[in-house]
Image 1 (cartoon, helix red, strand yellow):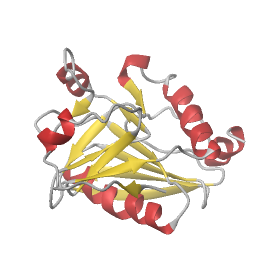
Image 2 (spheres, rainbow, N blue to C red):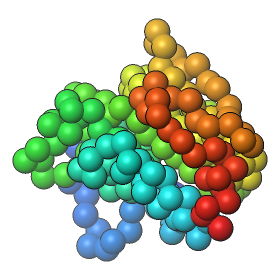
Image 3 (cartoon, rainbow, N blue to C red):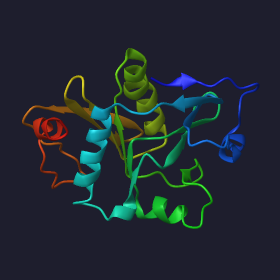
Length: 195
């Protein structure tokens, strides 16, 4: 579960990008507030690792980021997310060459795909299914996958004419994705392999 970190004043995006507390703690910036991202559950780490390995079949390793790329999104105040997995476009990857920080700010091209693995708890479900859904759509990210261990489903949100159209996959279905048309693993296989 994420936990807000107390700050004296709300941060701007520029202040966030310059922020360094001298630790290895990961944060997201949500409406100007630092939100500490706690370690993931073993199940979510295994799912992320499995999906990373699967993505390597379709993309070069340098196009895939695993918990190390930030994406600035729109909100009432400054907001920056730290997705579980990201697949770059040629343009988004090129935009970060020689960059001091692995952050796709709003003035840079969006990535092709963002994958979030839902952590336990109603707050996390709301964040992934509602808030991030809206934020990633506004950022014009072509695909957003919501991987849900609780329901054992993957929701593929495809950006069409300014908003996401969602398709839920479960059981013996394979994810159908315009970005990865040759995807082979079924949803049951994904959730069985990570155990």
